Image (tube, rainbow, N blue to C red; front, top):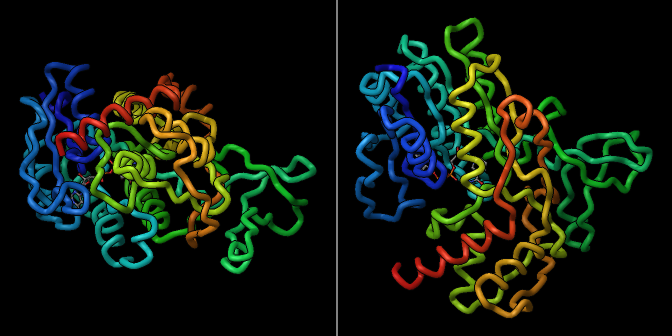
Length: 363
Ligand SMILES: NC(=O)c1ccc[n+]([C@@H]2O[C@H](COP(=O)([O-])OP(=O)(O)OC[C@H]3O[C@@H](n4cnc5c(N)ncnc54)[C@H](O)[C@@H]3O)[C@@H](O)[C@H]2O)c1
């Protein structure tokens, strides 16, 4: 029955494999089609078709190739499409804007055309990113909310890492949770391509029979995240370095902060969004709703991996385009999806540590 048919792009990845599993557990009558090119940066050079379960048909293909998307859409005849396939490295996106645009932007454009032709699709759920907020929300000394400005490389080189505020706002500002509706300020090629994905789906779906929902994820982490990909997943990279006996190099002054949300909580939000007929173009923020400093999570990880808590060095180094502070306002996701995150950062890091230890014993 088409209502049970689901199509997931990028379904062999970190979030996608968990999503396929969760959907199958919830609905034993489900049929899922996954389109994934098994990107070597994520899956290694010789990746074979993954075993994703008896309800899942795996199709190897590329979202930037329209034929692959149309073939998958014809096979799946889905009621719900989850669009997860993407190039995901912020730093790498500066060096390869054409590839990032081709996969993230053109891939979404091809998907939109296939959705419009399908006649079966009712909902499209996009894995969007908080990167669209850039430095995100700040409260100034008078209590007014604004969006922080990009930081200058020269200031950071002098050890000044604070986020400047726009003219008319009294600094220094304190970080506040970011939410859909506030001004957008994508600060990297990756961020701009993720925003284009949102725009393409929203604009192409106006007046159509299908509806698109955008979930802007904060930093998703957990067991199963690629330990190969050097461009994503700071906690996976840290886990790997700690297990190898290395010392962590912590950027800036250690006070960069992120909203780390455990992968199963993100998957729960995706499943709920796929079930709900929300107004077309709804954008929801998905995170824990609180930020933790990079040094703070590094210390939790050191503890969970049995390393002494001084296995790090604050380097003062910085990367242009790295934002200082990220945190989601998850009120709307709570109200519209009846969703809330359940896995604390402490518990999530303990799970990640147990998994990473096994991976390195049996790579
Ligand atoms: N992990 C995070 O912290 C995070 C945060 C915000 C948004 N997101 C978004 O969530 C989505 C999934 O991220 P993830 O963490 O599971 O990443 P991932 O790299 O583990 O998974 C992405 C999957 O997409 C596939 N893929 C890449 N390019 C493709 C292409 N051209 N054609 C077909 N498949 C392709 C990869 O092989 C991989 O299996 C992405 O859209 C990402 O932008 C992730």
